[in-house]
Length: 269
Length: 218
Image (cartoon, rainbow over all chains, first blue to last red; front, side, top):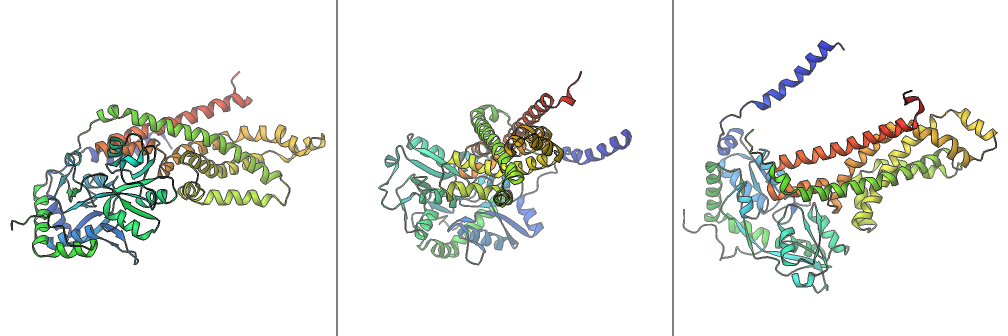
């Protein structure tokens, strides 16, 4: 290839890079772009029963999925599910790959600085998953022992603060953390209560005990500075509470009525 | 793109990046050396072992080459029950060793048969032929493809984070989980991996210059 034709080839390749440098168009509310597309892309978990998991037929189902489905129904659009993990859900949201996160996401101040949360839609406690008969009931029993958790959850700091003498094992997905407890590589796996109860039910050798931290509220996360979109989601959640769908879904996935101490809004907004 | 860059998080979390880099380098160096040993042994076995034993070496190569590395890591950690570091080192070495074996085998095959015949006619045993005539010549010839496999070791070391090894890619995700600054973290880790690969390339050039007489000037 001659020098000149090579230079031309390189400058052709540079054109896409120039397009990246072009200024972004004025921001349109996600509500409008979702209605335009006709599809709501929701980031959900698929390994976290009963919030989001894969059933025997291979479908992604769960409490969060049904909430996303209700919101999509209220907006009159189709629902598309994208599996996310605790580690990648925020980047997927800020990049625009998903329109909202419905993935058992606890509301924390650090997260509020980068995303906006809807009103809390559920309050969830946490547990330690341990082998039956291990005698572990709380942080005090974990001195010198190993605690497993998944990357992207706040447990690393919490365990370090509550029990500095515990060693930690960090995994990418929940099934590996459960396996590590079953095989004795970790003495406890700390996570939200609901999936641990399901894991304990599936495995007679395991049980969910203790109270690693107080119950936390979870919210739907959206990109910041998009009030129109956040309002639409909040209104859908309030409607879901008012017309009884929330209670029905809660009963279906958690087996109990929603805690009367927690209600989304009861002031008929 | 409207994204506020905050490169300060890299300074703030340089401790995590350093820990990850150290873990990656330790794992890569250990696996590099072990896989070179395994690969040379397996390739020599394929070419010079008694005919009845040769299929064993072939099975090793085909099995460890074709099973995805993440599955192999899970096998050593969850299946065999090793601890994190032994599982990572053995898993990465066994996997890379299969590739190195093929590279070494091609190096051995590139030595003319006349070398073997001449050595044997001098009365050398097969082991002596291998150690003093064939392998020295073969290893020098395969330095470039070997450096490719060693760069792959550095890249594949990141898979060890699935069994809990807190290496460089893991620490990048940790920084992102804490600060939500994915772009800055990804840039830092990219540059670090490129630097590691570049180091391997420079090292292999230096070794080749020292070993190959025809490359030396003057």
